[in-house]
Image 1 (cartoon, rainbow, N blue to C red):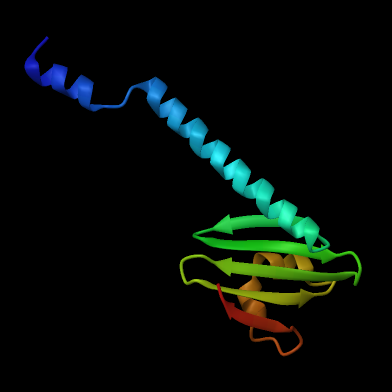
Image 2: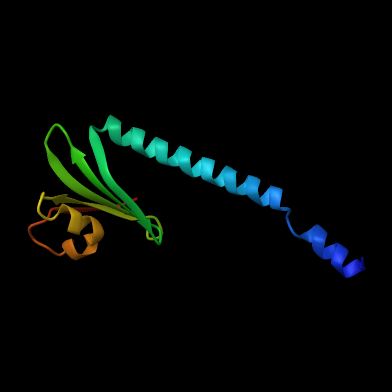
Length: 114
C-alpha cells in the first residue's frame, strides 16, 4: 500500500463513525421535536400539521378551548415569527402558503422578533 493511499484511508471517517454521528443527530432532532410538541400541549394546542423548508417552520394548530385554527410561522434565519388566524375553509392553503395571507386584511397577523 502506498503512503498516499494509507493517508487517505486514515483521513476519512469510518462508516461506523458516520453511522453513529447520523444516529446521534436523529436522536437530537427527535428530542427537540418531542419538547416542541409537549410545549404545544401545555398551551392547549393540538398540532394538525408541521413542515420545515429552508429554515422556515410552519405549524397548523388547533386550540381546543376556543376552537380556533391558527398557522404559526417561525423563520429561524431571519429571527422572525408570526401567527395567522385560519378558518376551516382556508387552513390547509394557509399552512402551505402563509406569506400569501400576511397581506390579507381578513387574517390577523402578529409579527414578533424571535
